[in-house]
Structure formats: C-alpha cells, structure tokens
Length: 109
Image (cartoon, rainbow, N blue to C red):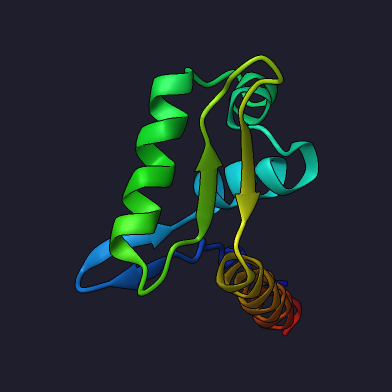
C-alpha cells in the first residue's frame, strides 16, 4: 500500500491569467440554476461585489462573454450563461471528471 496519495485541482487559464477554478465554476453553476447573480452570491455566502467582480473578470478574460447581466428594475435583474458560457462550463466539468479519474487510477496502483 502506498503511503501517499496524489491530489490536485484544475484551473482554466488564458494568457497566464486564471479564468476558471472551483470557486468560479460554482458561481457559474449557481447563476445557471438560479438566474440571478445576487442569489448565486448569497448561496455561496459571497458578497455581491465579489461575485460581480468574478463575472466581470471571466467575461473580460474569456474570448467571448460567459455571463450576461441584466440590470434590476421593478422585476429585479437577471443573470444568464451565454451559449459559450454553457459550453465552457460543460467542458470544464468533463476535464475535471477526467482529471479525478486519473488521480483515482494513480492512487489505486
């Protein structure tokens, strides 16, 4: 039996800047599920300001917008993942699953 275990996390980087990691992926998943940046931030116990900054950074760094934000009004604002954002989220999840499988296989040898 090995006396060590390999672990790790993955990030998506572009031009040496991290675009997506676990926290931002969780934020995007909550935006997709709840349709609101405010609600997504509350679910994560994150300030709205930090959530907005994260979305803004993702949108500026990615090649296309990942999230569209509609300003509030009498019905409140809304947040939605773009088609590109949904594809990016899906690809990240697939790569994360493959990475976790790789780690699992390394730890059972």
